[in-house]
Image 1 (tube, rainbow, N blue to C red):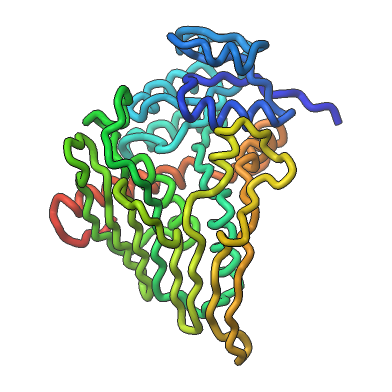
Image 2 (image 1 turned 90 degrees about the vertical axis):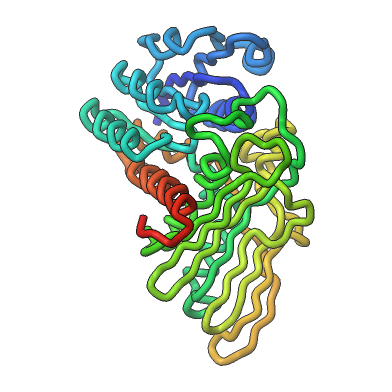
Length: 350
């Protein structure tokens, strides 16, 4: 069967465009990276010489040849640019976080339905190898009934990065929108919406203007989920710690190797892609069928290219989207609830 590539435009060529979307789209024969918006520097020309580089978002969105727009611009611009793209009859991928408010998310979902266009959100961390491994541990009930899960996404950045909107106080900035949108999406995939949330969000770095840590407690019927991030964690522990009625699973430290591989300009899907070193495997200590088991659990290789593989099937074949906009809306609902919980300094219903 002959593939008809989806003509695609990136609205920005910053970190997300250069490291994630550009390489993942370029490596997928179902897509043609046709247009990139880059206003000042010339790196897009160098990396994709056959691609048209334009200086305005309008030029990309209004191009009749473009079928898919990737809105990977600053968070507060996601809503207006996605609205513009949908009204222009384009399918849209929105970089996480989907929007700044639930109200904006609801309006975009309704507009996409009205325009009969695909709308999805780039929740790439669903295809982290350690998260795929965690899902397998839970699906197989290797620790019995889960009573507590603690998830971390920590970094060590004890300085304020210069010349980036991410370090400037503004609408939709801060670590909860940035890293929290990944983590909360994962928790919603695993367990759905919690009954209560108790959140603390704030600034730890001297001179910081945006929130750089959070500690979220999500309460389910018989399960507590703890979600934490900070920019002041130099010695990283496990990303996931799970305790259940039969035992515990301790995941590996550090982030998925795919991000560094993409930064190193390696080709997505090449030999060894997404593979974790043995020292980055998880540990299981539990009882299975009456036997005490202590084992090292190999981390499943991650694969971010699954996002665009699925998107091709959605647009060309009408299959269901792996990341539904309603799911991304629920992430924003939890983020809004976390800020409200922090303001009230108490547990609230999201």
